[in-house]
Image (cartoon, rainbow, N blue to C red; front, top):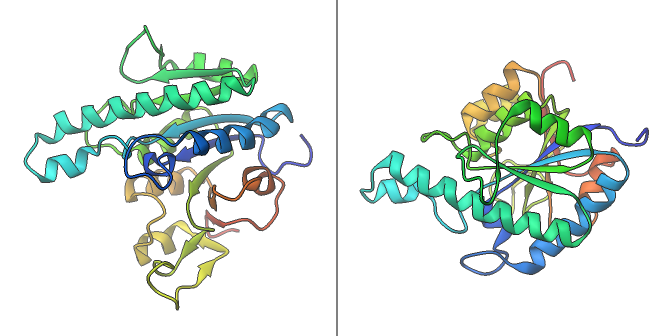
Length: 241
């Protein structure tokens, strides 16, 4: 454990990241890659929890913009995160990683109810805990869920997995002049309007001094390299860095 910069981390995955190049659903090769990257760090003693979005199946905000009741749409989005969580649990357990899905919306046939102390106990026992169904409340994103759960379990860092190798000044896919940041402060992220996490999540992290590491999950081994302190991605933290 001494070689790792963080003892306990929360990995934030977007639902879109799970669908790979497909336009919908879950790509089994992405799940396989994630499980193969998570297994060695868990075996090395890092305590890992995960929050996964549901945008590959249903996006509540998008549905609400087309006339659906926002709360109803958000609840549907929460159920989509449960489906993704179960798929990720299956992939991890096929790699021999003990995993628990804890849902903010009770559905005991498929997941444990979220209880903070029980979640911490699972993590202390070396199990990967996947937090599903967001916060259980509409109007809150899975970014905010990630910040909230990370603080509740006393995580050392949020590791936000993306399809690019950090935070850029603009979209690197459309702007060839975009530059990558090695480090940013929370205030810089908010003032520049950088798409790291939503403003509620950033504010939660800022108020509680919880660093966010943004990295490319599509490069095999990046999770372990980031934990080892190698210059992978962009770190967002306070002014006293």
